[in-house]
Image (cartoon, rainbow, N blue to C red):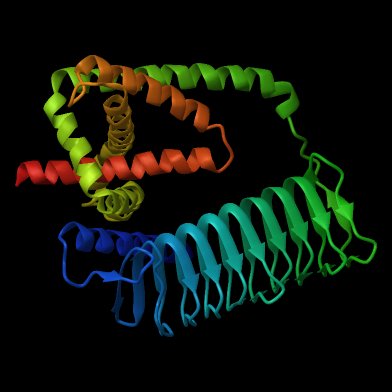
Length: 382
């Protein structure tokens, strides 16, 4: 029952992005502009759905809140659950039930009535935050200063715990620091590469225990690195060949795709965002019934192909933009477009190794390209 409820929350979140995309794509009159970018929101049966550059409810929400956008600031109380996905997320008012948040920078500065599940690049739970239930965090940099009524599970690179935890704490990280204000009523179990830094003023009532699991990365690192680069080179070569065939056999279609993304970037990004995430969720929901198993299997078969072609479409867009700058001809010829494709693929490989910027770049290309691909197909069918 709990897993089904979580699936429904995820579907609702990305339905918000899909609704916003349709509104932007069809140029409907109910688009709102608040000075920070496009935003579309609606209330259905007390539940709030919002998406755009800086979405957020204008008043208290009596039901659940599903929000996807670039910069999310939740300054009004939500009576039910809140499912948030964006680049920057700030929770400034009480969440009545569960909190689900995924983003680059997450700040929790208010109470949560039940559990909190957070994932992102940087997560900060301030002293004003009070989570009544359990909390799970997966991020690169994590700082917990508030109070947690249940167990705390943390997975990250750098972790600081300086709050009140009423149950056990489990930490898997490279670096762990327990501050002077930390009050842990249960046991602290940790697995770290470096010795944890424990303040003398910290109180750990249940004691400390180092996990018996060890890090095997030191022995496997050379093999893993070699396998990674070989696999990445093969994958990139395959993408280049597929892109080359598209440019040679269907130059007009690729030009239409580039034009679609250039003219409607917001709609392409939001639609791609919704499709990439909603297809596997819809497949799982379809396979819950015997009749829907064929449909679910078909969706699972289509999903990897959609991701591959969508990512390639985003790369081709960047390649054409580069070719247009390097070429004197307008539009650039096939040779220049192929050269641009090779340069962009190599550049993406190098940039993907950068912390935070690399994954965000990959997601930007994937979501934008997928949405532009679907919009181009829809226009062709029309």
